[in-house]
Length: 216
Image (cartoon, rainbow, N blue to C red):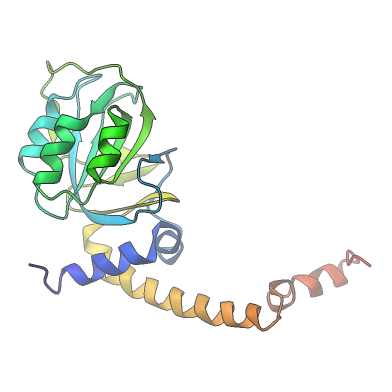
């Protein structure tokens, strides 16, 4: 059952990665090349993190055991490589436990099966090379992903534009900033539809005229 605490997360998810990133002052971008296996999907939720041993996915099995409904499973390792940390058997468990989505800072395999399963997964690579299960790794620890530190419980957002994270203690404030940005963009959109140009509204034409750079 959802409650009031879930509403800001829903707002951030619906707004999407780009809007949240801009509304947050261009903070929280997870600057990685991630491929969505289900294009057109938007998901968001608290991070459940597995920092795996190098080329090893034992920690993923442990993290899945503690997954709660609505969480985003975040998988990484010290040096990202095209080694498959996640496939259909782990995805079957993650879906059964109610994962909202999965971010894999490594590779996935069984891509066709994952698509058919309907579990939203974003991965850095698709490769069949398997992982070992010899290193325990660490579950529920902060990790750095694409220049942003993601801590357990931070809200991770994923869509076709990529990924972003919002610190747990900034979710409500960021949702408020998102509402303001959406209202501003809605107003601008109506102005552009009416024929006004951003080149004029932002004063760019005037700057170019002053500098003698206006095209004729």
